Image 1: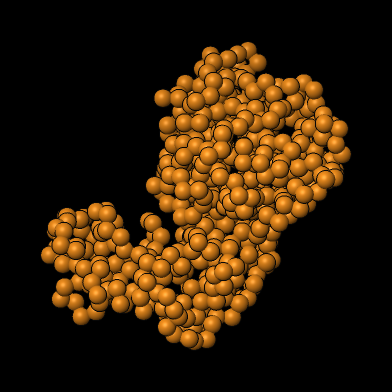
Image 2: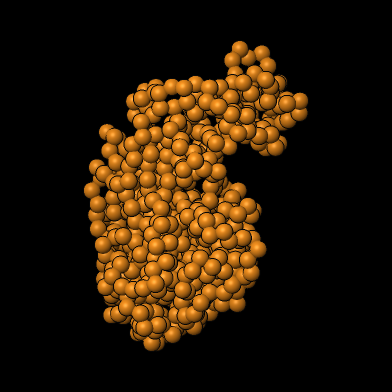
Length: 590
């Protein structure tokens, strides 16, 4: 441990800890623009400068380790003047257009300029040239707004393992983007949106569907319904000043009704449906392998996360047969809504508009995949991120925090707690295990404090195994089998896991992969800024949502049972295969 003084306070810190982390641990704020939690600091922005007694120059707090006896000032006149000049220089070449920027009042640079008392542009210089990249269905890039902090580069390479973004050129001419100045649509970008989630300004944002949704809501010929993903209810409140992890399910439902949606449904309904299909698919593969001796693709991977699907199509096409053929809950909902529900209410599929509210920008891409039209028209028409829904509620003049709690509409609004935990890393796996174990043994899955602890939490790769005992007669071939499962989140962890399977070092039956850190609660479309403290609060809220329900198993959802009885028949049946399943294809990496 090192003993040092920061702003007159004597502090002990572990040897090697940075000045930034040490100051934050005792509540001392040091601003940053390039720093990302748990990533190697690069000191690119120079905003976190501090004064160290005896040092000739100011030091970057993010990349300077503490040493015994250090005396540090984080708010001296010299520090304030230096930070101010750094931000003034950034502003001098930043083509911000703040009045009409998507990030206005949600911009770290704008907030920092305000904190530092900057009221005019001190240096009038050449602006970076705006180059709009709108080549993908999910994301929009504007290089004129880029401040070259390199956060997007860090998250894309170190957390997602994709490497679609790179710094190119030098000095003023430095540009952040795909190699050779290509567009994102021309390279292996999985469209997860983590770059937009960490960008401090408006250089990378989601492609907005807000105006499209307003037009649909105003069209008297359209019946417009909305589905809301489980992660939204634990994050939407942050758009209105709530603490991260505040559950706002009821207020969200009421707000959506006030926006004019004809019906408010829950993607959780389709998550329960996914478990019925995916669980049956897993058990079917195990039966073919263990009883029939067929060479079926195992382990089976979940297919709920479209960023992960893109990643597999680009980088691991040899594993595509291992992916569950199930569509994601978003797409299952759209297919069921435009067939089963449309028939119930007497509306033609082409006159029914399905809007999805998702924590994920890749869902915008997924909705436009050519195979996602099994209802005869596009199954999901528009996708809003959590941030976009927050903006729509504000634009409508709705006092969100004063709203009474509403309830979901029937029949596509009933869901189990198992569906809620789809939002968390490990949640899809636990939901599947709850149903599959009970089908095989006739008993509830044995859990500790209601959850499967080994696959919960923020560890990058998690493992668990369950020995099947006392099976019912139909599943006796699984008696004594140790079912091995794994969970990963963040695509760099998925890459590590898949490579270990390729090398024969690891063997599993079932694997959950989530694209974003923490799962959907940390999605690229969630309120900014998302770090581990925020992720843990949202995860806790989702688990609480699950625990508060009496219905906690997908196969016990009576609305799903009714759907099979009236319309689908049986899991993996002919109709469900047509509407709820798909296949994926190898993509070329530029």
